[in-house]
Length: 444
Image 1 (spheres, one colour):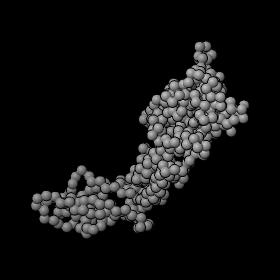
Image 2 (image 1 turned 180 degrees about the vertical axis):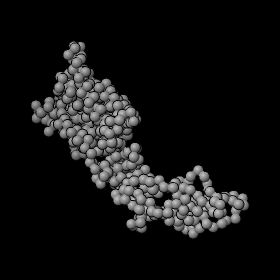
Image 3 (image 1 turned 90 degrees about the vertical axis):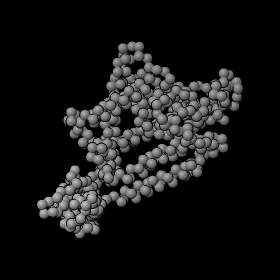
Image 4 (image 1 turned 120 degrees about the horizontal axis):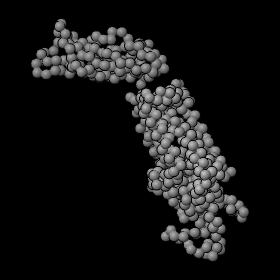
């Protein structure tokens, strides 16, 4: 099986997984969802609210360290085998323009389509129309990870009330279409920052696409200039026949025989092209997916080394910390906010303070929640008198009024009296949370 077929299978699997994940629910939570609308973060079925996003930093660190690890280990594997830019360019350039309409030749990507005839222009227009269906669909799938699919379609049925969502969907889809049709691989070469990052992460053991100069012979000089004399006159043992097929098939228009280049996306199209030529001589491809040290020592790629082991330790630590912090999430949440008035002095001389409580039940069952003042006997709860009913996954705002029954002789300034407020479940008192706040008592 050649690399092209392997990549196509990988593209299909990735597409299937990415499209299916937003529709898979575990315990009423998505596999992954960052909802700004509902202020929630879903991960593997667990639902975290904004107050519980302490697990998110570990996931961000995991993402970046994972990218560094993958790049150090296998070069630009993501670019050639998983990036949506590459996948959609293959669909547009090779499938739609190539197979369906015959405008391009997959064996010679250096040649631009001839659009001089009316028929060719119509085919080009239809190609853009078809890929636009794919790009706007991909834009919707991307938004599924921020807006649940069922909410997404419901919101789009009332576009005037959800202009921001509509704008994001159309904006992302339009840019994606422009990128695939007009920017092409120039996005990978000039815009994408990843190719600049890779040069700092590579080492001589990084697995990447390499032309085996020991077998094929030197095509370029040490200063980067190409030899003017043909290879067969310079090196009788060189196996390269200078057919240029590896150059013609390259989507980023480079000559891999010149050595490692930032433009190479590890698609291995050049290796497949060389394999067909070398097969006539019963020889393996001169272009291999290997490392510099492996070629020099004629050995296998060394995957385990100090750098990769270090990355694996960091990744393992991030996963462990994310699991640990995710297990410490609270089942009930409480936020205390003071109202605009500091206090109220009543006719009987008592003083009261008003607060607004934001109570949230993060469990899957409804709860009756009770309030209790701790560490201060003079503070009494005037409101609410009864238990607070909060449904599963529901937030409630509650007016909370405290009364101070004692009396303080203060002459110069108001006094802040600290207190602790405990919120606990009537069904299960062990399910509780305690927050600190202050009661303001006026001076005489």
